[in-house]
Length: 67
Image (cartoon, rainbow, N blue to C red):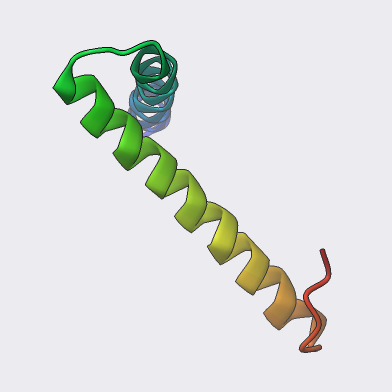
């Protein structure tokens, strides 16, 4: 069970690091597939940021932005 958890965490870490590498590479004019992966990575980060903001807002019980 613990070994599977470690494998999943390592897989997620590899995806995150790979996405970050693609973002940097795309900024320097990488191939088309790198720009696609970078766009997906940035969109996923934005979704996580928005979901965290919504979660904090719902936990505080207020309608204010909090940022």
